[in-house]
Length: 160
Image (tube, rainbow, N blue to C red; front, side):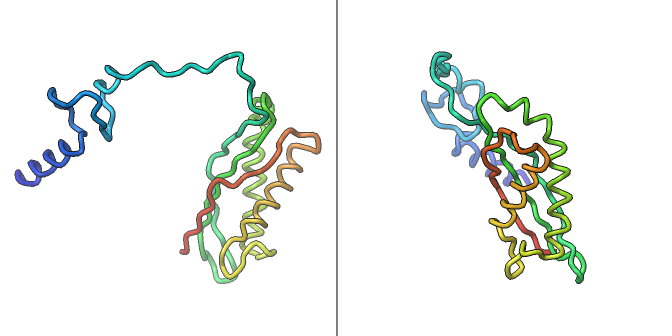
């Protein structure tokens, strides 16, 4: 046990994770400590006069849902959705986030299990999911919403 602790301490010292008084100035550490801020410069401040981008993103919490077919629970799908919106419309769209998540869950829950062209060879068709999520977003927010695009940040499948 003692030997394992010594080996771990030496390993962490070699990685630079444990601060020592004799560490060279500007040494790179994997885990920043309070000492890392001493020699560093100030963080750059964004210029308030600089033009803002045309769009912004709202990242929706990950959506996890089971795929239940006639055979029972076959897999679990996790999706991270991001909405590309017009700049300055974040507060207007963010209030609809719970409704959007509920609508996404209702739509995808049934369609993934029943097929409906969402699965190709037991793999989720990303284009079909994106089209369905875009249609659901249009339905929830109405035709004059400020969402430019529905983006899939991550789509993971796990067989059960």
